[in-house]
Length: 115
Length: 113
Image (cartoon, rainbow over all chains, first blue to last red; front, side):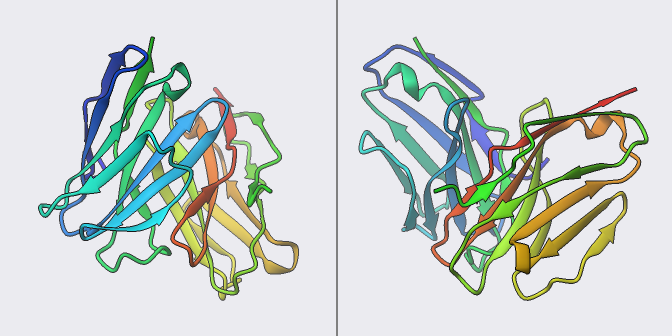
């Protein structure tokens, strides 16, 4: 158990809908990262937050947004969902320094299925 | 262009055989870190090892060892005396100064009893 929690574990929804994925980092970690894992794209970095502020952006679509709250939990919002958004979404956290060189600890993931 | 290339898609071995996973990376940064992560069938991603760009000393940790060669931009990972529980997808990853972690496509390792 990495100490990173994600809810829900599974999510099934329809095209055009909006969903929110939630992540709580390990105790003491200030950085939260979001990743998308799909068969065709592999593991893709989406976005990183450090202590409430956005720090780095990857291949995140404009339909997707994220935020990190004062209690350090993070939410990833996916809107106008398309079939191609079906994937496993991971959240990770890393040591308090927020350095990109720290190892990241991953949550169990949220499996999103868009029908 | 791919920053991290794992040329081996799948490797299948019999228990107790050694398995070496290849990883080639590309970066212009002088400071960077390399990682190996494991994704077992249960789906979670597990951190295995980390190496920084200034330390080319190869190490052994239990049944895991790695070979980092800057001259060839390679960071290979070996599992010695493989076990069925080692069956998983293994990802090599590169972290540069831009805070983004780039993963390779992964190598699926199947260890048969």
